Length: 326
Image 1 (cartoon, rainbow, N blue to C red):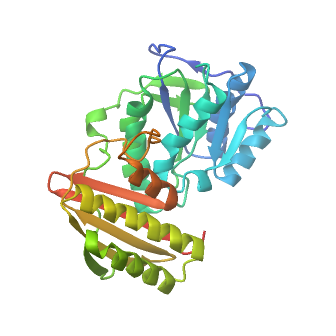
Image 2 (cartoon, rainbow, N blue to C red):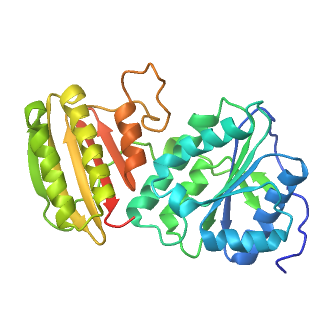
């Protein structure tokens, strides 16, 4: 397809959709033409209807879409997904902010997103799947808006595509959108289920209690300095791990364990304790001003490049990744 060809207006070809529901769509595309054939009408229709639009893509992908739209992207807002969604746990708050800022009257909004852009690590892709599984919970009872989630099948593992099929109510093909017969919410990844893989190299370890949090902070600072982490990122990681450890001594049995190791270009810190995290959207909903709990994981999600949480009645593990350079 020529990048400036006008595709047909998008339409729903099967099934019903009530306008007062969040519409969660998937686009699994095989090449650039397939991407543009679906993304172009999705955005163009919204602009024609004066709906607020956010396009959150990696820079190169956004450039190709702008070329397809020519000068017609008008009032669409563009965000660099590699910055906005480095930690996928930040995306639900980002969508909430866009709705609040641009549609406080409840009118319809469209967001085009590619959270699992080509080049994501296995750990990041795992968290993208958990983010997808939470979207219907986060937005299913709110205002009407549409989110189109894009996946490049050439660069995405089949296990990730399978999760896409399990978590989206609609599937898009060009200008058409159809109900997803494969939707099985009970088989989608739950936010805290499963185990994290063991580190490739032996980690350093520190047991801590409330009385040894100062020692924990110094331990993290030394590890970050040894990993040649930039000063601001070192301070952010130290603050994040301190928040996690403080949660452990308050809610996780009074003590915990910190493990630290390096991965290529990054430092990883893991805090485990005997607590059980049960609120699926914890850390993804902005705490109310009078809220006395739940602030720690919100802060951690916004300080670190990736946050992974696994929890059961046997205990909880929170693993944070911080790149050495921003």
